[in-house]
Length: 201
Image (cartoon, rainbow, N blue to C red):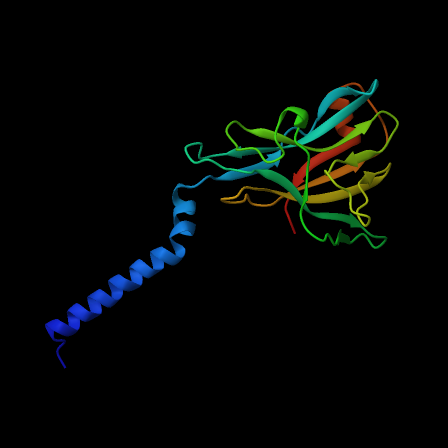
């Protein structure tokens, strides 16, 4: 049966209304994906940064967050831990169940807001190790069930992501292993405290 002009017009209007409804419902999501901020997160430097902490030599490790679309503002940005996993006696890696994402402190956080608008790239403190001590993760709060220490001969895998009001990055996973040996030489130290980006499970 041929479609009458009136039927065709009605069908076209219905489809147009559907498109308008779709834009109204999903428009913000589509707009954010096409022209909104685009956050990326990575391990900044596997060798860390040599600093004196309270007079003791230490090495700090960071996660670097960037907005690949600088024309779009990313507001209230934070970098959060979502998983902290450790191997059990059988060698299998098991995550610690967190009640929710835990924010990491910003590098130089004393001069930055807790939730900045991202222009230039920023670093979040992942953790640090002092000479003759353990490696410590540096979340802004430490839940009772979260062990933030990596002792001699231990390893841990963390999962983190960057979040803003508009979007979030893909998750990044970093494995940290520490054999307890300190070296002032950055290249040599990298053999003893291994921080490397790995595939997320």
